[in-house]
Structure formats: C-alpha cells, structure tokens
Image (cartoon, rainbow, N blue to C red; front, side, top):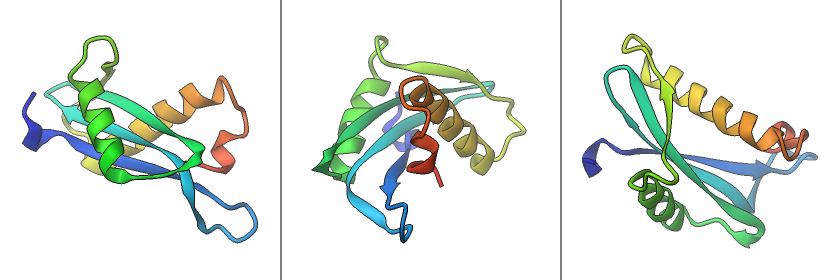
Length: 109
C-alpha cells in the first residue's frame, strides 16, 4: 500500500462534566480509499495509558497492511473525504457499541 495515500483519524475520550479531552485512552483509525471501497484498520489505547498519536499511526498503519486486521467498507467514489471519515467513525463506534453501549458518550464527538 502506498504510504502517501494512507490517512489517519484519532478518536479521544472526553470528560463528561466539562467536555475536555482526556490525555489517556483513545483510538486511531488508518484508512486507504480506493475507487469503490475504503480499507481500514484501527488500534486502541487503554484508558489508563497516555495517548500517543505517533504510536497509534504506527500500529494502525501496520494493521492496515495486514490481511488479518484490515477491514473493508463499500465507499461510492462520489463521497467526500468528510463523509468517508464520518462513515469510518460510525463503523468503529458500531463495533465498540457491541461491548460498551455508552461508548458514544465518550468517543466520536
């Protein structure tokens, strides 16, 4: 995969009381857009560990190159980058919601 085409989304936990970003925990999504699909992979940082974007990019990018971790979403070519990013966030949050139904209160805003 071409490194220049890989993009990243960083999702962070937020404090419920004041909506500030928590320095601990979060997720990174690496994605590569092709004609009618977007390939993506993600990695998560434990809520007890400090979030590092660089580490997230390395891990998610490595998973994107692995057939074991790479996922694919249909993606019509007419979608804007902003719409693609929103679809990827929703796919991640849908996955996380299976394990924690309250995750949307903390991620993806």
